[in-house]
Amino acid sequence: MPRRKALANTNNDAAADKALQPTRAKRARTVFNLELPHRRQIIGDVLVCGAGDTGQLGLGEDVLERKRLALVEGIPRAVDVCAGGMHSLVLTNSGDIYSFGCNDEGALGRDTKEKGSESRPAIIELPGKALAISAGDSHSACLLEDGRVFAWGSFRDSHGNMGLTIDGNKRTPINLLEGSVCCSIASGADHLVILTTAGKAFTVGCAEQGQLGRISERSVNGEGRRGKQDLLRPDELIIKRTKPFEAIWATNYCTFVRESQTGIIWAVGLNNYKQLAHVKDIERVLTPIKTNLKDVKQIAGGQHHTLILDNAMRCLAVGRHNYGRLGLGDVKDVVSEPTAIKQLNGKAAFVGCGETVSFTITNDGKLYSWGMGTNLQLGVGDGDDEMEPVEVVSKNTQNKRMLLADGGGQHSVFLVEAAVQEAQKENVPATKKTEAKPAAAAAVGAAAADDKAETQNEDTVAADNDNDDQNNPTPSGATKPAKKMAAKRGRGKKN
Image (cartoon, rainbow, N blue to C red):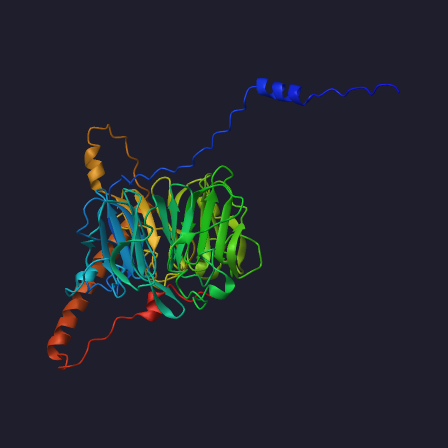
């Protein structure tokens, strides 16, 4: 028989060749890390306008409204401002926070037992210095220099007070997300969004409009098996197959997050007027959806509308059109796609919103407002609605740059560059100033006259009230009229 051909054993050779090949180096995993923000540096004066029946203007308990921008005294070297539903926060360049307004549910974060103390700015005791602040209808929050997030007050839902945590309201600041280093916070009307340095987004608060982005349909009202525990405990907003997040924004009932590297912006929450900037025909979005928003610098919003500031310095508006809140003129229907406000093209530097009002600050430091004028939040001196942006002129803003603007439930708060910066620039050669246009000068003169008349009227009203109290003293045992709470606390109906 012929001999069988022996098969060569190549296993050992292959193993030897493999041993001779250099070992591939494992790809090092890049650790994503965001830096803590810098505290704003430009020092400003705090200005307010609108309704002040709960002290949210910070002008004292006798001042019930201001038609034009009025100066709030007693706050040294302010650098940031926020307007809540019926309260206000101010951050100073030293990291202190001042608060004033309604404190029924602890939104001021300090003791206000002394009569009238809630209507004047006073400092909040914190375990550290703050870098940033945010405010909602009845809650407040801040980011400290060490990355901790402290909050106080209460969230609310359609049934009323929810508490800040499962233990109830917190009248003094508490650490809301222990063990995490955070770099950004954003408040909606009744929810809070937190971004960590690791690029993770956490949400807490009311979920009825889907704004938390992580609660199922049957649990958004807090009536599931776990009650409100999942709502009032900060938990991560997870979107599958996404990069770490690099930015967050919140409007009254919406949340926006932006991915790093891709720049994709995801949105979740109330969409009954297309305020999520997504054409999806659904009133309430419970899980984040991808939007087409690109090159976004800032997002702000009110009850049913959203403003977007892009890198081209355009202000785009989307959502409900009523009362002129979009600034697009006499629009007859819902605007379902972000639309640029032509008047502000190429010069918008900052956007802000109240419930039904909008603000823009241009690159030359001018303030424009539009929307519902009923509560005098626009600062233009009357109660008319403005369908398009109108420049806000006041003796307190004359020849000064506006820095920030924010709207609450019935009031607005602003930051205008303070004169202290002008003193620091004394050694800088001054450029020749052009004469103001007659129309602008006339407008400033009219604003000053209105401010003076308004102050005189308030003095007269205060005197009349004092006489009424003397002639008609309150009967023993009778209570004074209670502060307006449920109806005025919220920023309006959600539908």
